[in-house]
Image (cartoon, rainbow, N blue to C red; front, side, top):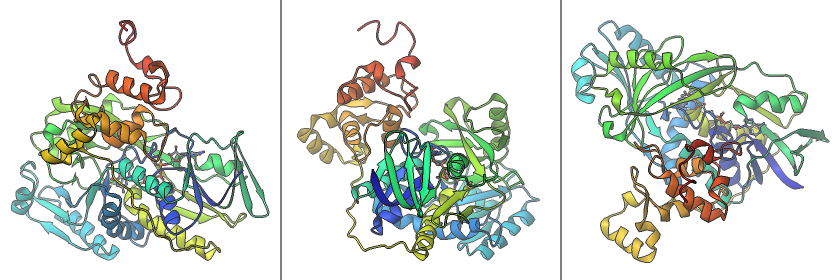
Amino acid sequence: MLEKEVAIIGSGIIGSFIFNTLTLNGVDCVLIEKGEDVAIGATKANSGIIHAGYDCAENTLKAKFNVEGNRMYEEIATRLGEKIVNCGSLVVGDENSLEKLTILLNRGIKNGVKNLEILNKQQVHKLEPNLSDNIHFGLYAKDAKIISPYHFCISLVEEALINGGVLKLNYNTIKIEYVNNIFILDNGQEKIKAKYLINACAEGVNFINDLLNESPIDIRFTKGEYMLLDNSEGNLVSRPIFPLPTEKGKGILVCPTVHKNIFLGPTAVDINQYETSVNYESLSTIKAQVVENVNNINFKKVIKLYAGVRVKTNDDFYIEFSKNKPNYLVISGICSPGLSAAPAIAKYVLEQLIKKGLITKKINPKKRKPYTNILSLSNSELNTLVKKDANYGEVICRCEVITKGEILEVLNGPIKNLTTDGIKRRLRTTMGRCQGSFCYPKLLKLVSNFYNKHEKEINFKGKSSLIVNDIKEGGLYENK
Ligand SMILES: Cc1cc2nc3c(=O)[nH]c(=O)nc-3n(C[C@H](O)[C@H](O)[C@H](O)COP(=O)(O)OP(=O)(O)OC[C@H]3O[C@@H](n4cnc5c(N)ncnc54)[C@H](O)[C@@H]3O)c2cc1C
């Protein structure tokens, strides 16, 4: 039986940040995920914005942790070697928008947001030349930033792993015993014992609550669908462009990613069950709304549609210890701005656990080495690398220019048994304009050789998604 001080269930940005923070404070912990990889829930499909914090209602956990989290991100990104772009954000509006923008500005000031300013037409168009002519004002939040949310999450987990944390993937808890204030989790094959248990399962929060005979939390789902444009469109806007917010949320944006793509979205569609399909009507809604604020959007350059689901609990984040089991912490309703708030939530969780008797100790953390990115190397650096290892000269994914050497590095990284989707989220293989049409066969061969398995046994995502099902009959295997 694996024995740990703290067990965290759910490896989205919340569980992963907590795992990282506890591990770097010398706490012996395990991160448990039912899926095949970390960051496969809402953390995989969101807008990637570290909001400044003007949007959250005053005196809420959302406001507090958003503003605090925003200030923590840059240092953590530098430590991890993660990309972070300090681009700021703009909420834009027509000639009648000044009053609403002023409300946002004042709320931001009350929430403790710094560097907020309302720009006039000339200033806002100078900042973003592709704004539509009907845009007269903009709330400029200089402290907003963008990151790659799933990549950040992966790096947090990797850093924790090289510093002694343990990750259990594909761990489906079917039973939890609670005896003498100790939790014993069981998936039918392996038991995990812990003094403290943290439920960071988002959409799955009540499954774990149920195993512990705890009352269910009232959760609701709102889906957000996106259209992603090719990186040839990367100059369309330089920062997230929000419309005026509505009671449905922050609205549909035009927004750059750290990889120089542009996304349009997300929608906000209430759904009864957690699911991530994209529907035609929503795409029409996105198109109609974004052209109101931004000109020159080339919809022919859409390369991908995807969706993420916000899990909501009332109007605020829910972070509470159980009344019956004092060392069981339930974290729920971490919808937007959960990504922005995550480091501050993790810090708060650590403080709360210390109040409950958790002991921390100073460690000398080992530094995570970011994966090689040949595009960031100079010609001479690349030449030296290729001379040392010819795999860095063999391009597998030609849209994103990713080599065999880079893929092998990831396959040998701290998180084992990656699927091809896992490789994609670390390196961007198959994420370019061909969306894998050219590189998938090469990637498949490389991965199957690495694992010494037949290509037909390689998974795209979880166990039920063999790639051979995704390739037309008479294709890859018939001509071998
Ligand atoms: C469309 C959209 C746009 C957003 N944009 C932004 C933004 O720009 N900025 C921002 O700050 N926030 C944004 N958010 C919010 C942000 O994405 C979420 O707050 C954050 O990702 C929530 O992280 P999480 O760890 O709580 O949940 P998740 O990422 O969903 O992680 C939960 C994990 O728990 C696992 N799990 C579930 N049940 C079990 C179980 N029984 N056992 C083990 N594991 C289990 C799941 O597989 C999953 O990996 C957005 C959200 C959406 C949907």
